[in-house]
Image 1: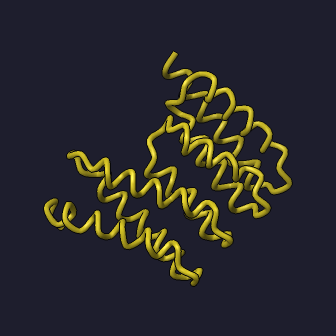
Image 2 (image 1 turned 135 degrees about the vertical axis):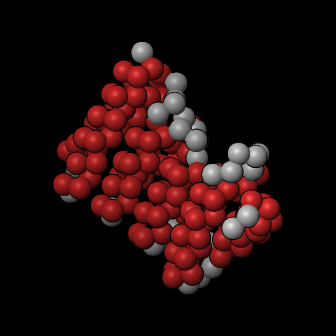
Length: 163
């Protein structure tokens, strides 16, 4: 597809996704958050300024974190980590809230999101994220523990790279 088409179709697609995230049907919400991730990746791949589209994608992804559906919260976290910039303090704070979610797939996605978003954060926020990830090393579910170990390792590599 051409860049002109992306510029024209992207914002309405994001707007449509945001409206469908408020729908009653969980399958519609899940499809909307998946479309949101796809649209955001197309827009973020372009060089020109699509800050309003990125902001709309972040707002919609944040909205999914409150959803009753485990799958929607999980995919919403993955989408948030994809569309928010590393170091985005609000996105990091909201993702960290789901580190204690009752569903392990959501905790796993939250660990991955926190580890990614913490890169680029200031020292205090980075320390807090590392502490939160360290707590997940004792999670009851092994995928969450494994993700926490990987996330902490990636944060150490990031710290070494910037030091």
